Length: 64
Image 1 (cartoon, rainbow, N blue to C red):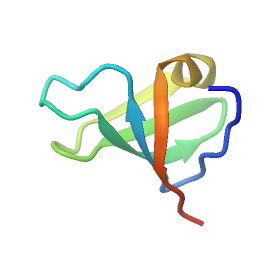
Image 2 (cartoon, one colour; image 1 turned 180 degrees about the horizontal axis):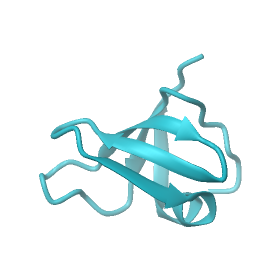
Image 3 (cartoon, rainbow, N blue to C red; image 1 turned 135 degrees about the horizontal axis):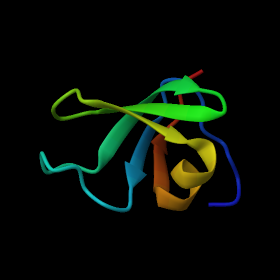
Image 4 (cartoon, one colour; image 1 turned 45 degrees about the horizontal axis):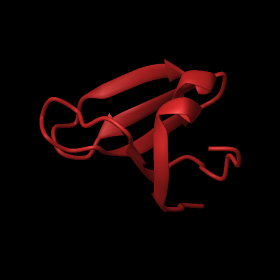
């Protein structure tokens, strides 16, 4: 995804689903690393921004 139009609190869809069954996440931290929280089970994951951009499928909603 070329454009980085996500902000803190944005809801995003990742390419691969989480083991709990959903692929919807909420962004909880933005910086060199992106911290995302699973909408279904609440698990948090911290991944580098470059890897996040590769795995991002689409942005559902913008906050802020």
